[in-house]
Structures are given as C-alpha cells and as structure tokens.
Length: 324
Ligand code: PBG
Image (cartoon, rainbow, N blue to C red; front, side, top):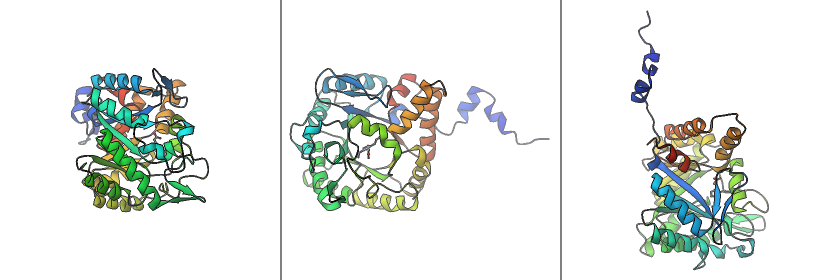
C-alpha cells in the first residue's frame, strides 16, 4: 500500500493550480527599452529578435501599448552616437540630451508609467567602460563624480527609480547623498548589487554599441565563481540606502537570488538579461523549443528562486498572454 502518492496533487489542472507554489504576475515585471536619436524609428536589434531600438515618438507609443497590457515599469537605455561619446561620459548629464528629454516626455505624457534609468558610463564612454578608464585601469572615485551628476540629471528629468549598474564601490551612498541634498528624497535606487562579469550581456552591447573598446569588465563586475562575495555587496548596498537589491544575470545565478532573498528583507529583483532572452528566442526560431513554455518556465524559475521583481525582455509577450 502506498500512503503517500504525490501524483494526487497533479491529477488535474485545477488541483495543479491549487497546489501551485509560485506565480508570475505582470505587475512583477519591468520592461527594458532601448532608445535611439531621431524620429519615427523602430529598428530591430539583430541579436534580439522581437526587441527594437525606438526613437522618442515610437517609444512613447510602445510604452502606451504596454501600459494598456498592464506593464507599468520601464527601464530605459540610450544608444548614443559615437561622436557624442567621450572619456568622461559628459553627454550623460548634458542638459537637453535626448535620453533625459525622453524621460521628461514620458513622465509628462504618460504619468502612470514608472520610469527606471540606468546609471553607468558605458553607453556614453568612448572607452566603452562603466567607469573612467585611464592607463588600463578603471578609476573608482573619479567615476563616482560622473555617476553622481548622471543620477541628479536623471532625477531632475523625472525618473522614479535609478539603477546604478556600474559596480563601483560606494556608489549607492554617493548617489543617495546627492539625491537627498537636492530634495530628491523620494527617488528610489535599485542597485545592481551582485552583477557578474558575464558572457550573456553580448546582445545588449550590440543594441547599444557599448562593448568595451579594450579589456573586459572583470575588475568591477563580480567573478562568476563567487557566491559569498554577493553578501558583502548586498550588505554595503543595504547600509548605503538601496531600496531594492538586484542580481544580474538571473538564470546562471539563481542561487545568488535565493541567497539574497534569505538574508535581506529588501525586495529582490533579478535581471533576465539579453543573452538569456536571445538563447530562448534562437532555439524557438529553430523550432527546437516552445517559446511560450520556455518563457514561462524561465520567469517562474526566477520568481521561485526568490526574486519579487524581474526585469525581462519577455515582459510584453508575457502580458499579452493575459495570465495574471
Ligand atoms: C551597463 C549595463 C549592461 C546591462 C545593463 N546595464 C551591460 C554591461 O554591463 O556590459 C546588460 C543588460 C542585458 O544584457 O540585458 N552597465
């Protein structure tokens, strides 16, 4: 006689739903969007099927259609023309640059949209690095000054959440101070807490033409071999005033999501990054896997690991399924 028959809890769709431990809601999702200069542009990213680079006008239309589907938070990334890049990313805080202008427009025309921004030098840097690059080195404290200016400019433009993705030491406190000293006490910081030096960022760097011109990002992004070190980063971000802790990438780092979830009471976010999206899309386009099922499984795994919030290029596709 078998007293314990776990299959009883899987016998019908209704019972399976009743016993479901994890769910994905569209309200948990943040949709990253790429922005380019110009008007009436919508250019597909070659390595990210179904993902586009938008000019301001088409971006507004895209955000509006996502809002109708129930996606409410958008993480905006600019692709900066090469001639506007320099060693100190001065374009990033220049009043009137098209990124800041677009944030203003979105908040003006679609006030229900929650706008998240990215803080790091790479899209604006002629070296393609997240920090100030000199003699083969990334200078931490000099970079903080640039990040601070960028943060203030983004807050002034109306951003709701700032996302420092640069991995410099001390940046959360530095940015928090500048925000508070300028009366932006209500602007949130979602810190890229445990951001690993990953091969999976490849398609994103295509989208923004932001790959490092020399070297790699291993002196600032974390070593994929390390887990305990994520606790040090999380502790610092916590005491420095971060409102959310983020793990990035997500899929090869589900243990890190779980670790931060178990050790910190702040909401945990995970970035289901470009390479993770492109792998699913490439296999699906070849007919090797089912896109929809794979997408749902990926998102579920990230929620199950302990992330409340998922930044994902699948956000709109998920919302279209109207599952919750
Ligand atoms: C830049 C930044 C990167 C991503 C978000 N912000 C790339 C990098 O660090 O090289 C990656 C996002 C993705 O791959 O989807 N600081």
